[in-house]
Length: 110
Length: 115
Image (tube, rainbow over the protein chains, first blue to last red):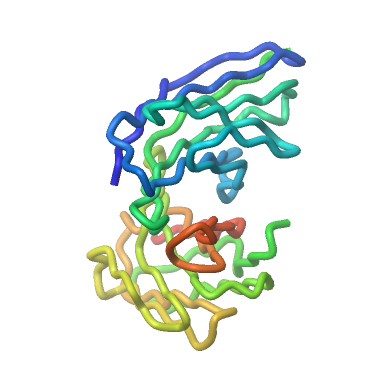
C-alpha cells in the first residue's frame, strides 16, 4: 500500500478556507485517495474520496494533482466544529483495507 | 449518525472478566471491521469480515475473539485482557471489502478500560 505524508498540525482562522495537504508519491494506478476526520474520542467520519479527478461534496473538495502524487483537502469555510484530526489514506489496490497514519491535527481558531 | 451502532459505549472490566462488544450496521453492507485505537496512536485494523467470513486477522492475540453471525452484526468477545488492551474499539462497515464501494463508515466506538 502506498504511504502518505501529512503535516503534524495546522491552524486555520474561522471562516477561512482550510487547505490540508497530503503526499502519496508511491501511489499506483488503482489506488484511491480517501479523507477521514476524527473529532476527539469519536469514530472517524468519512469526508471524501477520489481516484484521478477532483471531487466535491457538501463537506469538502478534493484536489488531486495530475501525476496523483499529492492531494489537497479543502474545507471552504472552516468552523470551530471542524477542529479534528484529518487522515489522508491511500487504499490498497482495488480499494481494500485502510491504513491510518497519525494524520494532521487541524485547529480552527476564532 | 452513520448507521453503525456500538454497545456499550463505555466498559470497565477486570483482567479475569469475560465481556463482549457489539456492533450493528443498518446500511445493508457486506463487510465489517474491528479497529483498535490506543491513546495517542493511529487506528490499527484487527479483523475484517466479508459476507460473514473472516478475511483478515491482523496478528491479534487470541484473548480477542470476533464473531460475525450475519452481515449486520459483529461481536468482539474479550477474555483475560491486560491493562495495555485499554483503548477505543471501533467498528466499521462497507458495502464491499474492496473496489470502488469499499468506503468505510465507523461507529462511535467503545471506550474500554481494563483494570
